[in-house]
Length: 260
Ligand SMILES: [Fe+2]
Image (cartoon, rainbow, N blue to C red; front, side, top):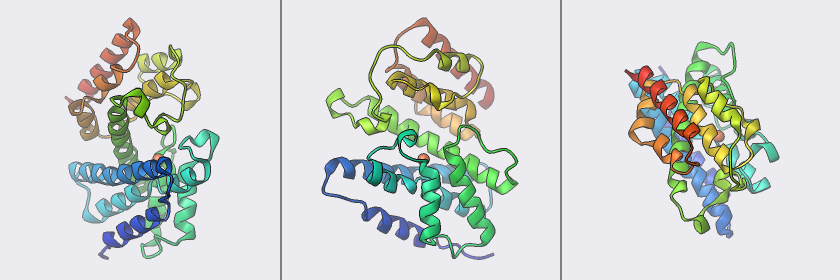
């Protein structure tokens, strides 16, 4: 079996990211945010790969897909100063374009390249593409979980920040208005992850991330969500209502049934 040189890809990533550093602290802060996010997503992907016991080659492919899943974020932020795909462009497709232009994956086998592109393309879709081949589906699922786990970490850390220190790019510059869209509650009651189209304010942005729990693929990821208390930390920054208590109960019940 061929030896995959992971260091080559990490070096390429580091050099590429450096080209985006700027005198502007707002830009730097957000470039660093995605750089650090990426490294943790790689760690999460490795944790999942180990837990589900895939072979060394597949573990490496999953790690490369993790390393490049958000490579489009850098160009996106430089060009549009936002991480909101709706008002800029799809950062997954932008990332694939960058990787192809720069021929970053060209020393990998064609089929491995194809799987990595598929995993990147699928990482931010509402639902995993249907009819994916077995390997593309495996890597897509690993990246989707690994990414969500780190987004939970980033946002729950951010919730604790004082209001005047908040980096509003994390919540896509949404208004901090009262209330929340009822669609999220309906979806949680029905055990479904929600569509982005209902997001109107910061509460919605927080609630939708809780609906992602129904789209988590691996038990190790659900266990992390429990251990790191991401659900409790999110409800702490949402309105205190009976409806919220009900949603919390449903989410915990769902996870406990899955992992036990
Ligand atoms: Fe992403």
